[in-house]
View (cartoon, helix red, strand yellow):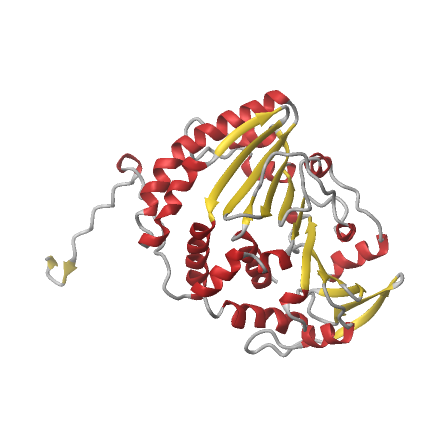
Length: 363
């Protein structure tokens, strides 16, 4: 599932544009009713729109085998082509592990027996495959592994809607069969989410607070823990149109004072990161060094209890960066690892070498 998600998100990111702070024009899609109660992260990705974008067409020229390899892996996993997917939605309790509940809305109908056959096949060298048993859950039929609890189960809730998740996550949402109970953070974030966009995600920041509690800030003058405590949710939105990749990241805060402080800290962080990014970019191939200019292009703003950051990047730049990342993951020609050397004053001195001794004493 990780391979499938990476491919889809990469394809969509290429054409993201026209993101703004305008009032959202589409609420949560119906498919989100299969998200677990209390989910702290939800997402929506319009796969078909991304695959039809100019950005993906350009990416295919730089990585000719992206379809033959990536799409083939998807079909091997699910029994149908990625091009049959209209949209992917889902979410889950990401701090509890287990992965998200994934919902695929399809263009053309598929059959449960075809998906079952593909899901039972071996996935890697040495894998013997698995057997999926049918389990009735209300009016639905869930197909779950007989033995391997780490493989995902699935349910074809209609011939064009496929839900995939671990059985222990999938069964409760099928039994509920209605909209989930949203956390307070997700409810706040939904007010800024636009699910008509090519990509939209909402994260309840309460789940992030424990990870930052008591940890020192990596940047002087910036307090990530304080910023997270001021927020209810973070919303990331992008739309496909035009020639730029434009993203909007909105921090939905508890009050206007918190939003103002979040913007202030974001400005300070960007001020510190801009020269660092330029220096790090010198380690990249020439065609990817534009990445070093991105932090200084980020704009910040605040409106009421919402602080936002927006970034516009030419589509060609995004294609170069994502192609480089993809090739790196494939082990081909790829940018070198980025390394930030510690400052001399913080670098511990190496311990003195002990003199070597031979049979007759020191050498």
